[in-house]
Amino acid sequence: MFSAPLYNHTTKLSLLLIVFAYSLCFAQTPLDFGVSTDKLVYHSAMDTDASVKDWVMEGPGKVEFADGWLEMRSPNEEMHHVYWCPETLPSDFVAQWEMQNLHSEAGLCIVFFAATGLGGEDVMDSSLPKRDGTFSQYNNGALKNYHISYYAHNPKLPARPMARLRRNPGKNIVFEGPPGINADSDRVHKVTLIKNETHIQLFVDDRPIIDWIDNGDVNGPSLGSGKIALRQMQWTHFRYRNFNVWSIKSDP
Image 1 (cartoon, helix red, strand yellow):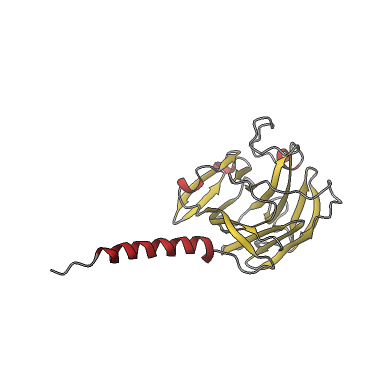
Image 2 (image 1 turned 30 degrees about the vertical axis):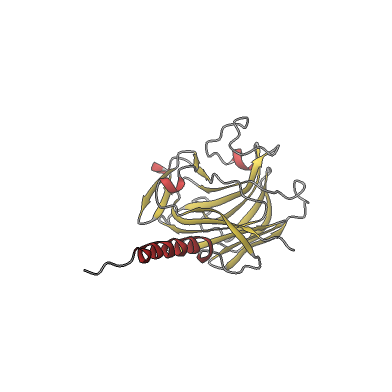
């Protein structure tokens, strides 16, 4: 009986590993949004407990997994919640993820980024006051950050006709753009967030939503490295997958 040489199996395994590494580092690289990405600094498929084992939930949010997605909601619509990525992102980055609304009746989605304590502490530093999802703890408390509301369908203000970028503390509205995700959409959307030095942009399905340069007129110099988090209001039920962050190449 003919037996294939051992090197064939070894070669096949090596090729599979190379293809896997290539797909992880390059195939998921975002489209050209006017910046050149350097390397993948964080990846989570968001499809199992293990893929988000170091993420931190604040408030009564719950995550479950189905069909390769992470679903996030507050049981019984109890309270708002914030889900922190464990990675400290560089000052200049491109973050990208996919998401889909599972409850179009009401909700609100926000991304916090470049988040630190007022003194530059890590957001998880034990010296900072504890947080439970209450909005004021994030936008007018012991943290500084930017935040963008890109899906806004609050029952008190349904189908808000704009996305907003704020600089915190102080809830300072610094830019308003068109709606990111429409209130009645049940499509899968791809969100791309870019922070390139002082330039902040957000795209939804390649549509420009936010485009602002922080010249330091609000709350002093622009913010640098820090944490990123996904926030939902209590009525919200979205699912997420393929959360990736790349650093941006420095100019030569």
